[in-house]
Length: 537
Image (cartoon, rainbow, N blue to C red; front, top):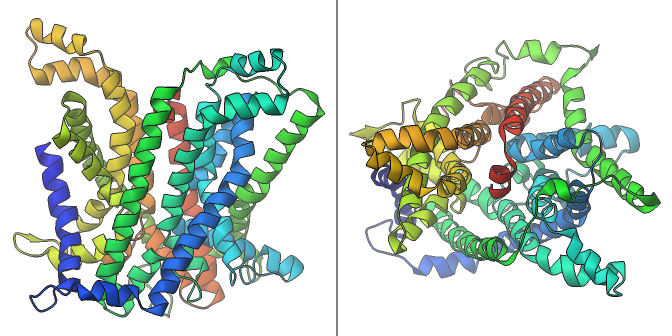
């Protein structure tokens, strides 16, 4: 536990505490009254209200759209099912900036709906809600569908034999068993939308702002650390409560059900109703997931003089606007290098943390487990800005070092590594380790020859998730990425922030490249995954 605790203490707790300290104790004396002052401001109350409202609306809309898909993937067997499962998961590993860009190409100025019907949604909240559904569709399908596929259908069949109608059997048998999974999925969707930044930054503009976007505005534009500190505390408390409820629902789901193998529950659709449901789900996936991505790719090739590679070629040169100090194409190499380094750090820290959580129990370890999830509950913008004001003096003067970006990205990757590896490590029979020790193996050799072969696949999956998450991290990176070394998400945001057809086209081209890299990473993960590890994740 020593190295993970030290890592989180130096690169997470210290920057966050420093931001709060500077905001609430600017002259050496605590000013807790600023919390009440800030939370009573009408503009801040509007931000808080919109954050909660859009998170609730996004969660409800996501459940409404994705639950039929969860049923189809759980109960139906049809050609191309595994490929479609990978396709619907692609949006979840895409950077939020890219998601916002895809919907900007679909419903924004000059987008598909604007050209066909003169309809623009980028100036309305609907674009944000639809983008959140696009991003979180896979959360519901994986979480609810994964459990649904393992529920024994014979229980519902028994209820029907006893005289219950199809609806009554489903409502009284299947639905109560699904409630914990639906609650867990809803809480995760609410968490991701409550802390939404990239999507709101691209599609909301100045009209709509969430807590995360407002923290960025207060720190980067207004330099109001007091307001930013208060909003950070509010977000931290809210997300901590969400994570606590989520942990309770996960424990309930793990202990309350008797499951069967998924292959025993899936079958080909029967009757017109089931075929219609399958067609409806395929249509919704096509319109909601494939269409935005397709329009994004199409816009990257659609130049002023017809289709071609003009925008891609322009990525290799500087323009006269001074948007970049280096050609935008260099952002690809920067992102890959940063993501590889961040993955190595996340796997090392997350692997050690998972091993510690496996070997010991008690309040200390439970508290350590909660510590590992904190980066998901604290504003990434706060962490990034905290890096700038804390890691600027010896012996940790890292502001001019390239390693600063991978360290920030690794903070987000570690929870994914832990959650992926922990179930597999806990499944290793302790007697195997004891037998190796009896035969004279050292603890290191026992781990290398007993644990490692059993968790190798989970380790590769964890590394893949850490790589994909690091590749798309934006909230912290937007602060600490140097002007001469931008990452792909930062480069896309800069291009979209400047007017002109060339900048817009280059943003579409860079987003397409980023999408391809993320999709390839996901497809490799899909080949490696097992039902058990993916279900636990």
